[in-house]
Amino acid sequence: MAKYEAKLRGSFTEILDAVDSAIMNNSSSASLEDSSDFYAGDTRCAVRVYERYSYTGSNRVSLNFTLLETDRQIFASVITSGGSQAMFLKINTLGEKSFLDSVTSTLNNYRI
Image (cartoon, helix red, strand yellow):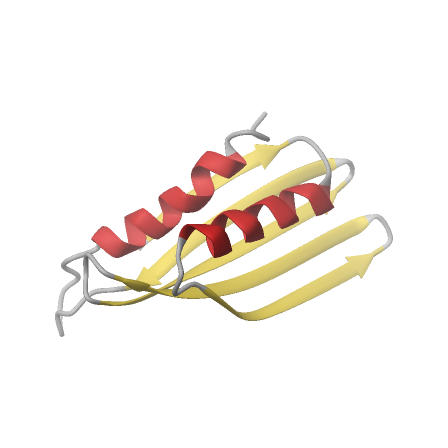
């Protein structure tokens, strides 16, 4: 598992769209598996789950992206999983790290 979290600045919608574009344009096998959006007053939360095939690991990996805006603050959490081929311990996590890297460079543009 690989993880990235950060406080961000900018437009919630713009950040959400930028991450989606970064993921979908970075891999021909990437797909949006499901999404959820929640609004309460001026609080917004978007959850996206993506999946792609990892050529380096010869397996599929998933990426969960959560974006939260509340009290004029924006927080992002990105967690990847899957990709390991071992039964009892986690090996070959190259695909997870690569999937995470496709998002972190985009989010770093908005990082506080």
